[in-house]
Length: 145
Length: 98
Image (cartoon, rainbow over all chains, first blue to last red; front, side, top):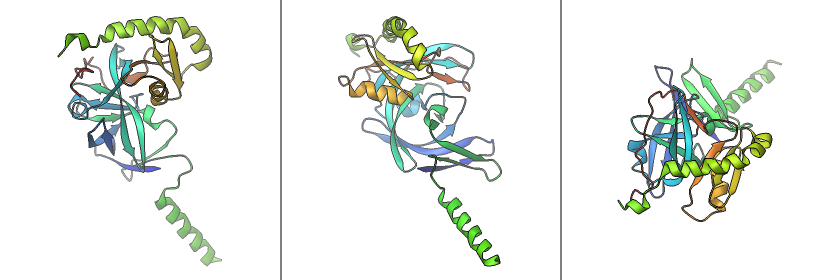
């Protein structure tokens, strides 16, 4: 699985995912936020359109140290070439979808601030672009001999 | 909205944490850092490397629409959000029409 994203002028990391609730889905640009240890955080404005499946309750600790109980939902997302179940938190008064470190568990995140690109992939997955470049380099080396 | 169906999150959390305190020492000894989804009504719990893994196992082994309490073993909260400082009060309600 490989998922490409981009880095904006504010050096924020963005990927595009599709989030699906019980019967409805939406495509969303999401910020990769490693300060968020959960999986997906949806603004209420998006969550309320998706008919999310309630899963339970969990606590959430904010930057000021305050801890509050939050309702937790499950949803499925299109994650590169995969579809996977995710745990979703919902908050009011935020505007962006956040992807947290919890969703990246087991994946490799490569960030290139010079090229303004990022790649998320499963370990052992070759980026098709990287495979093509490697073959070209090998061909050049063979010709030089 | 039918008040009888209104979900009391605080009471749910309180009872769940009461149950968790009974099993906390055992879980922290062996499974620190992992996630646990627990059901205080049946006194069952399900472990996972991720929140989703624990919740998925719990949902697969329970009646539909059952709700669980999610904990990261050894942590004060399963989720941290360092980029948000204002305490939010989510208004999304389980009893919303489906």
